[in-house]
Length: 550
Ligand code: PEP
Ligand code: MG
Image (tube, rainbow, N blue to C red; front, side, top):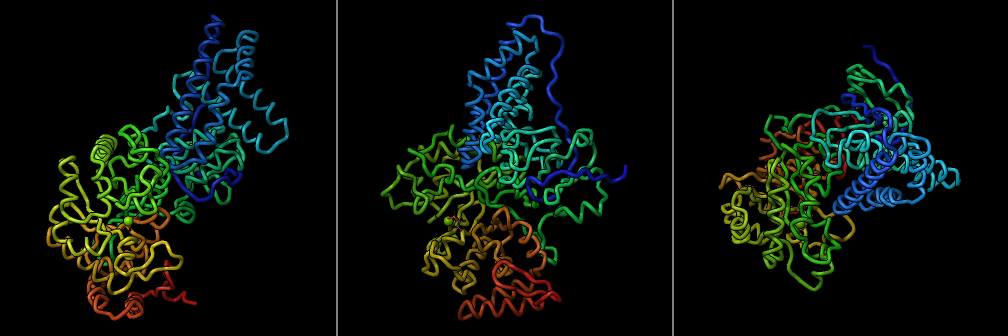
């Protein structure tokens, strides 16, 4: 079939290609036999839709997605609105409509009344009422929600979700295989678009009824506002991010590119960009306002959506790294941090470990311990979770000094360069301005960690900011680091930087850098090595290919 462009409006930026999956509108089966029974069925569906939205809002809050939770909560309130119930009653008892049709009609009447008030904010609410109607109608007609049920379906091939319209909750609970959205109707300022933008999912709205009959491959260009049916391969490649294979250096040494994440939105962005999994899940961020240690159920509620999105992939879950700037109210006044603080609350540690093991059952699960001081930290956790792969974070000069015994006890090592740089260089991690991580003292610390990992046959990961710093990447690879865990938005450029490094050159470079007198000398070494590799560094975070230098 030839390529066809269906113009619409850009609603969330980015470009992605996937197989079309068209969501059908709910259809009632057969005539209404008993109107009272039908009304009871419609009311039950509306209540169930409200309950689904409430559960979704709670999950979003636990993931630290408060703004999205608030949007979804609007639907919860509306589901209980007596005016909506009155419209539903009239549609069924007076007009004889079946439950699904009555729900759609009652919500549409209610939405039109809100929209007629002429207030922009309320107009967005009107969209949310219509989406509540679609969700409840789908429940009444089939017993499943408009987007397939409250638990996200299993991940599969990249999919473009196509529908007449979608509500904010439908977008917030999309399964991880959805890479883009195309809507026949809808507006770019609707709450659904706000959420798609937050999740980094390209979205086109108002593309007309033609999108509802698409099948096969579809490209969504959220920058131009176009839906392309059966895109020619060249078009897809020109517009979309080309899928990346596993990370490798120029001479073919594998370096896994993983992502740092705090919730499922990060995971979605990272996987779309080609990350192989998650190398650091910061679990404490969902609990910074917690009134007490989170229990097993709270951990599971926070972990399940994230680990679901990582089915079959590496999921490295760090146990709570409370303390310092991440101290919830109930821990104020304590000096302890990281695993030492958690070990002082063994029941809380055990509860989180149980939740991690249960929620991560479908993943290549690893547990990461923050601010490890010695082998006893690893041994204590292993006693509680003997079947789990345990990684130790090296984040202090003392831990680097004890790297050998820690490597002997742990299954893998991960360098937290954010804290380590501050400790080794005596710098304030939170002071404005960049810290020169490419300092010879840091290079020596990383080399020490590399030697300890090699001596015990352990994988060495880096999950601090240095993992995506183009100056540091050759030094890390030269020191024996084989996993880089980076911010979700940095996955692509990290992959490219790794692909430009020759591991043998990197090994020579790191030896020279470890003996350099200061950071400026390391920078000069890196500059020379960069030129030799056909590129040069252009300040932190940018690589300028040779021939395009200003
Ligand atoms: C680090 O210190 O490098 C790290 C990854 O942990 P966090 O930034 O969460 O302290
Ligand atoms: Mg840290």
